[in-house]
Image (cartoon, rainbow, N blue to C red):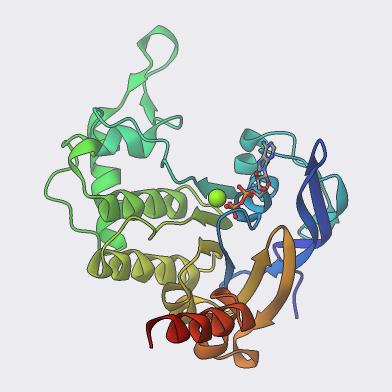
Length: 260
Ligand SMILES: Nc1ncnc2c1ncn2[C@@H]1O[C@H](COP(=O)(O)OP(=O)(O)O)[C@@H](O)[C@H]1O
Ligand SMILES: [Mg+2]
């Protein structure tokens, strides 16, 4: 087995007296999807912010290509090949699709004072990168604000693939989407995986996680309920764990009693 792209070992993070994350361990391998599941307040965002350089852990270890690391900023994470698509997507809605695609990494022609943005090349590159992933947009000139939520996620995934990310982190990419759109986004998640990226997919929907993931990290109130390889856990068991396991069964029993 080769070295994981990312690994956390017993990682922990507190905010003052609040323990947001405690003793959490998992790995992210090239060409695999690690799924982080948990209810609100479980610590999912805190974990990915550590991986994305937005927070620094204060316990345990974070290894990048096998070397213990603390990332100082999201910029450093990106420079080291970790691309994160946050829930708000960080896009500029009034700017065109191709402008957003190149935001912060515009191709230029000319030199010195003659240096300018090569609009034609940028437009063409965006169109091609999207087409390569099978994303068919009517017009890369249209404002990003006119795209559906699912289309925006797809553009963000294609962008990370195009600019050579090694790790792609997606925070709840399917949360606000309908069934069909969620399916389309998951298809591109699978494509990024098949192109060799290590993907971290955050969700609270086991039905979205199960078909694409190779590994499931279950979080609850900042603690790990375990990290399972796919062969070691069924969808039914995953759903049960997510629903609170025994707690849900007790609730079901109680509710049945209440209506009968
Ligand atoms: N910046 C912060 N300051 C204080 N507490 C925080 C901060 N960020 C997260 N927390 C706390 O850490 C816990 C985990 O939060 P979070 O990682 O956002 O969970 P999730 O993304 O799974 O909903 C929560 O109790 C939350 O209130
Ligand atoms: Mg969150």
